[in-house]
Image 1 (cartoon, rainbow, N blue to C red):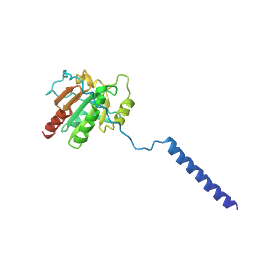
Image 2: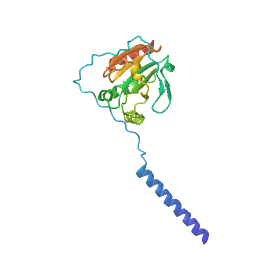
Image 3: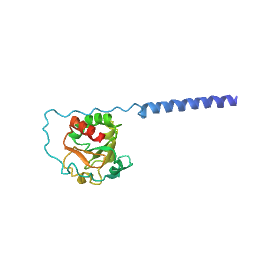
Image 4: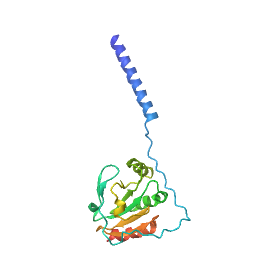
Length: 195
């Protein structure tokens, strides 16, 4: 009789624990798949920015050696032999948000073509978590670095967004201040990934 009571008590205990675990999982754990936000498009009446960066096409790209937002070491010079699309942006910058859709489309097109994408986040009071949240929100599947070493100064970036293409030899092959032109950028990537 005592063994039956112990067995019954054990079965009831396991059932109660199971109900608790299932209830906890249902109410407190987010097990839904990640849903990416679509980046809003830029207004069609924006004027073209006629500024250019001070770092000239044809100059060697300055070294970037810093941890990414997940703490992994990153070095631009280690990517010699690959074309690098380098985008200076801010999570607070409307134009940077507007161009995310184009960057994601370009990344999906060139990710397997020896083109590496890198975003450098300029965040006045922002944190690594702000950048991670931004990256996750738009499902941006490339490396992001929070600029803590004045990388923007070494590239002489004055406005955001600013985009560079660094060729296989570490030389600036393209630069643009303001919203990127995805067709023009695609042509540049096609040209330099074949060289």
